[in-house]
Image (cartoon, rainbow, N blue to C red; front, top):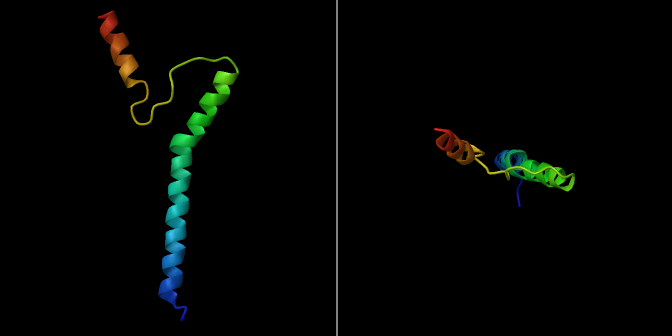
Length: 67
């Protein structure tokens, strides 16, 4: 079995991409859910974390109620 530059480069690039994807998932999903859980334990209530849409549905329904 021969180790060449192509195999090493492919391995490094794959490792970099997987690491970057994991960081993004942690930043966009796991960290907000973790913070939400901590705040709920402390007694804070609020809207649950929703990826991508956030509070948009709640805000639009409140605007419709006021108008």
